[in-house]
Length: 321
Ligand code: NAD
Image 1: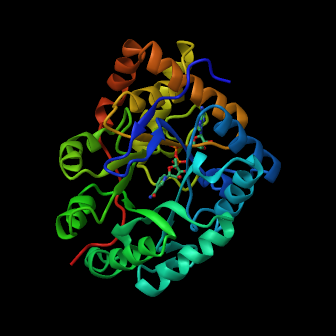
Image 2 (image 1 turned 180 degrees about the vertical axis):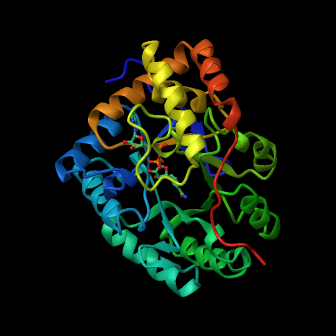
Image 3 (image 1 turned 30 degrees about the vertical axis):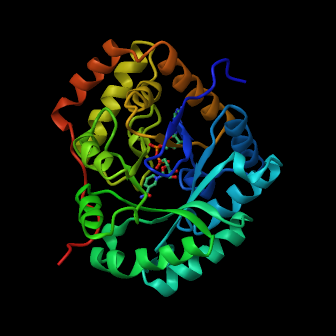
């Protein structure tokens, strides 16, 4: 057990309190390499035992495998349902995108079955920049509101890469209908552009989840997976930074995670984890930053190396008309 418990932070107006470090379950869908069922169960158990109470998945991850694995692992915990918070998504599938009311309504039933749950705490429209944002406002969110009334979901969220999608949808939705946003790869050492949106989100009472503090593997010693969309230049700069840290006896993943965790306006930082070792390392890093603070010197050295590529991102989604 960690000596100091993980910090709990409020999620917008939802009343939920999420552990500052959240469990990203995409690796349980074998997205970053094969993870056995036994390892998946042990990883989730370790995360829960060390104070992680928030688990995020999607039917898209591993073509439904992540939801199935997470469902088995949560059941194996054998603890009351209200002791953990689960978020899944709708609208993005192995077969493609479909944000229609009919598809997302069917989707939640399929997800609940795979997760072996009666409800999820948060259902998020997954990567909305690949659909019509107007459809999200006029069709998808109203369908999700019905699921809320039916008790299948507690809160509604939207996710995606370009930050402009969030204000587009929030500005056009009745206040209080979208409870949460999930942004990824925009609050880390190499890209911190989410920061500019935080005052707006706070003014709307919308909870903020930030994912991929390791920039989907860019800020790790072993580097990103083959499919990573970053430019050659960004990948090279991150690998230079990782090598620099290694030389100094530092771990780039730990420093990156601590950088992201330091902003308390963000309710939770979601990290993809596929082993007990990664859970142990990441929880220790979270506890250390909450008690001792972050390694300012090492972080500013990495920022210097990454300066030429600072806030560089990649295209995602379709052009909205
Ligand atoms: P990430 O930045 O968390 O990186 C994950 C990679 O880093 C994996 O290969 C993992 O094994 C590795 N890793 C984790 N801890 C490590 C450590 N201590 N040392 C070395 N390597 C370590 O990226 P991610 O998994 O893509 O994002 C986290 C989660 O956020 C996802 O699982 C998913 O739940 C969510 N997410 C959602 C969206 C979306 O909704 N559009 C997008 C991205 C991520």
